[in-house]
Image 1 (tube, rainbow, N blue to C red):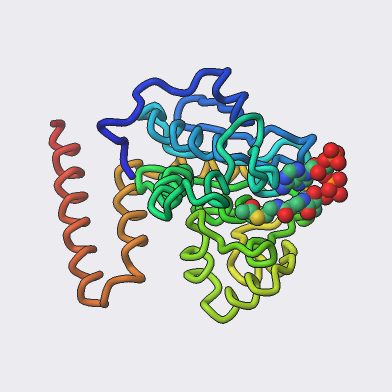
Image 2 (image 1 turned 180 degrees about the horizontal axis):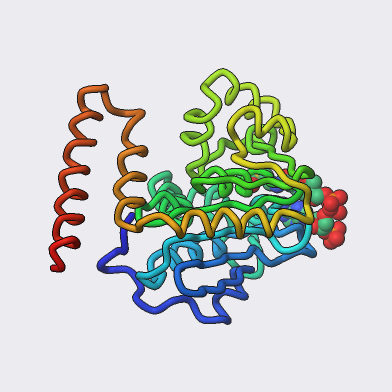
Length: 277
Ligand code: ACO
């Protein structure tokens, strides 16, 4: 999930971003990604996610914070439903390409989905803190994109919905693990298998939102969070995120060992800094 050695080295062009319905603005340590297709409620296609992966692979090294939002008053209505038609969207590969006549194998479909998942996986990189700023609907893939971020700041009009099971699908864009990690398997089953909308206040109670604010306060609240995150030492932040990410899978002893290892590295760095080299 760190910068791929054999991946692209040049960021997507403006044309590629626009075809993927994305905007990207990098200012020093902060990258802002906006899903930009308000006339379709920011519905996304496969190209949106492969381009997101491309953005992740080519972020400038000094970027520490990534903020993802949707243009207008919706985060995202999820996958463009045209992706399930045989012809796809704008000539882009359809999700069901070759499945009806058996020309696509199961392995090919899984490879294709793996490529789409790359658009979501990099948001967990320990050297980044990723923030989803959510207004209005975050449905299906939109909810999974928000779940891929470290921090979710919601406007009080936000509605989260895991729609996939209602459409005969499973959530496959890396959202099931964070959902279960946050709300537990029982609540996750209830949310996914009813495909109901979870409002902002409930999301906050369930731990799905770190902060809920009025819609007109959303961008200010995100800016405040970004400023607070930037005030922390970068190396310490990276090491701490890595520690926190492994805590759930570790025993107490393993986690204590991981803390010692990380701290020894930090203390050595601080001592070198104090000694001026
Ligand atoms: N794919 C393609 N087009 C979409 C999508 C979508 N996911 N969502 C909205 N649109 C289009 C609508 O067709 C409509 O187009 P039109 O103006 O040509 O008629 C336009 O965006 C506006 O949509 P409305 O439904 O009119 O907007 P409204 O604000 O009333 O509702 C909402 C928004 C709730 C998001 C609704 O559009 C909706 O339920 N969309 C489908 C959500 C969905 O099922 N997503 C897939 C989930 S599964 C997954 O992501 C893997």
